[in-house]
Amino acid sequence: MNQFIEWISQPWPWYVAGPMIGLTVPALLILGNKTFGISSSLRHICAACVPAGIPFFTYNWKKEIWNLLFVLGTAIGGFIAMNFLANPNTIVISEATQADLTALGITDFSDLMPKQIFSWETAFSAKGLLFFVFGGFLVGFGTRYAGGCTSGHAIMGISSLQWPSLVATIFFMVGGFLMTHVLMDPLMKLVGF
Amino acid sequence: MSVVANKKTTDQDPHCAAPNLREEHDKGLELLKYLIIGVIFGIVFVKAEIISWFRIQEMFRLQSFHMYGVIGSAVVTGMISVQLIKRLNIKTMHGETIVIPEKVFKKGQVIGGFIFGLGWAITGACPGPLFAQIGSGYTVVLVTLISALAGTWIYGKFADKLPN
Image 1 (cartoon, helix red, strand yellow):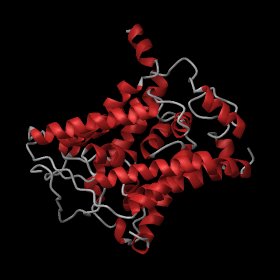
Image 2: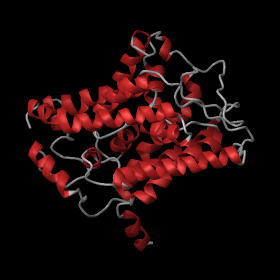
Image 3: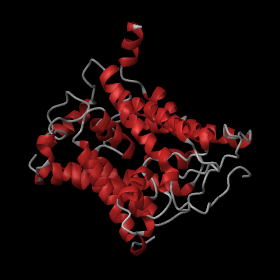
């Protein structure tokens, strides 16, 4: 049993994780005709909590409770993995990425997330405003405008051979590349890195 | 394409991106299976370090194959599964025909997709990992989640005024 825990605690390679994520598509379809898509949960939470008479949020969200349970499960899964199956070793990040990020002012590579950004101390500073408030807003606004995120478009959409999802995925990547290679540097300087 | 049809139900917004197309309503404990799938999903996200801001940086800097491997093999697995469902006419466990809604092209997939991409690179998370990050103890990501909800709400508020 200990050996099993030790083995499962190692970081999982892509060829294990990818197929497991891909199997979510048929699992949801076969379990109950559900279409895989996570950003929809954000819309259902809006519809449940602050519909404000907006037509976009006026629908029977209760029928989509399955989606909210799915994301609740995702959070619980995160808790289980981190508390019972955590990797005892330090994360291995590509040296080229470490060098690039060091140039931007990120110097702590000891955790899954950069401690210099992801802490409550930065939450209410200019850094928090950029990485949590501004970034989060773009994720929420962009995914809904695009009608899906990595799960709904890149995985579910492309899996079912739908070209609009391929277009969406290409533009996810275009936005990400532009942010990483062009905008990140001036934005990080602006918030004090 | 006998299995795949665009289906609209009366109490359902036809534009919901990830709809529940089961004819019967899921009752009580039946819903638990989605929680369990979510738990497995969350464990994979953490164990394969998909929730890591660093892994997303590696991906956008083309300095590691990991995330391309994850997403690529997920798509291939999904594609084979969907093809098997269609060709073998596999039904749901309740015997219903499996329905995959058609995604209609809109300008939003370009503009919104681009905006999401910008945010993905900053936060290091798409919506799934957001939930897994919070569960795994990075509670400050709650701020990101609340802001993402605000973004979704603002989109909903102005949806009919935006080009689409």
